[in-house]
Length: 116
Length: 116
Image 1 (cartoon, chains in turn cyan, brown):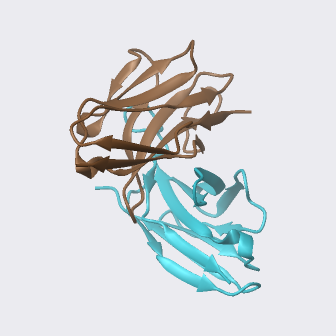
Image 2 (tube, one colour):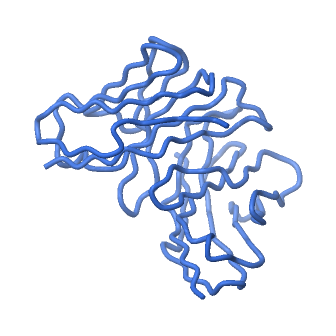
Image 3 (cartoon, chains in turn brown, yellow):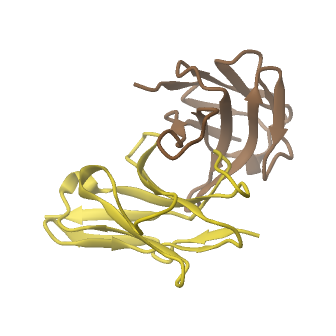
């Protein structure tokens, strides 16, 4: 069974503070992603990574940094948290061989971030 | 630019009744389409996906979806719902030209409530 675990599951941060959301996968997948979910909206891609030590910008990268120190771990970093970054954040992984049989995202359970 | 629209934000259906959730997409290339489900306090799980071939695809738990290129749609159906089908359902489009990847564009989601 594919496994993506996120920590923390819930966090309250202060405006201007630094927040790090962590993601660990045991799927042996090469690709990892960070998505953001706002109430009443779908998910939007923040950053993604195809290989360790390399990250790419997604659709809404402003205000976020990402780090992929190993194949298993992918972090999302908010250097200066703002009220507008209150959301639920999902990490996901997928196989490099995104074929018709294997192509899907495996999601973590989400990290709820509240910035006050 | 690509987009996915789910016109129904909320749907209430009686247990045992049929369910249809609508999804419309806008994409100039070959669409690779997905339906994901999100149960309360959980990550998203794949219900089904369409890449090519038979426009009706079968998924888990009795769900199926029908792709229509002429209507730019990918509607989800279930013949008889159970209370456990209460969840948020997301339609998504993989937008890498000529291929597939985890860079998905999601619709806004449809909250389904099954009542007895």
